Length: 228
Image 1: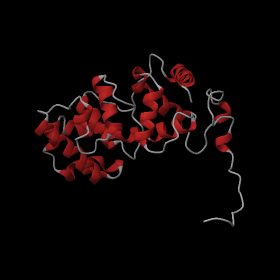
Image 2 (image 1 turned 120 degrees about the vertical axis):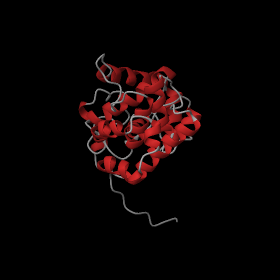
Image 3 (image 1 turned 90 degrees about the vertical axis):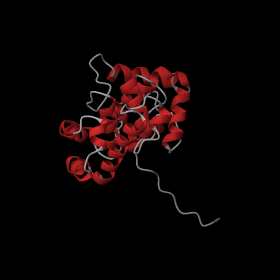
Image 4 (image 1 turned 60 degrees about the horizontal axis):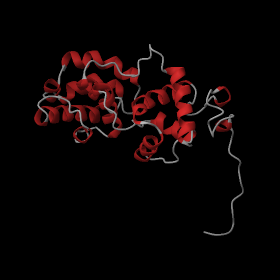
């Protein structure tokens, strides 16, 4: 998809989901430390589930120093509903220790520093930089963003790093942070994983996967008997 058509898609999504009352984020946080921890915990679970444990977690561990000194079993018990709780506890405790030991107890505001923390990849780093510091270094690519990027023709790649590069080349920098939010909203409301509502999608005229083709069953072809 060329840049002009991509920007048309962005404008439509902005008109649908980008109103003045739009939260622009799915996690409830008060500071950089909270958005970092919550984003790490949000892997392979829902934002609603993460938000449900946030008050308990941060009332007990309000800052990096508190979480760095936490008993892993105590943290595991709090975050158990999120799944993969042992791994996630190790990551948030480890990240907190790094913040205390290497960054004077403050969440770093640079991509290269964030990527050195346990449990932090480019997706998490982009979210933290955008929401906590207002810095646009790239596009956070989660499952929704990856799915819609391929369906909308933004990228043909399957790896998050490649999709992010394509999105950064396609959209202006000041749209990178908001793009994640808009694609997630549309992915949840219309362009769902299993049953996308292509026939009623407002992007139908711009989307190469439109007109309901995503819901059609693939044509079965006979097996070839020649060649390896």
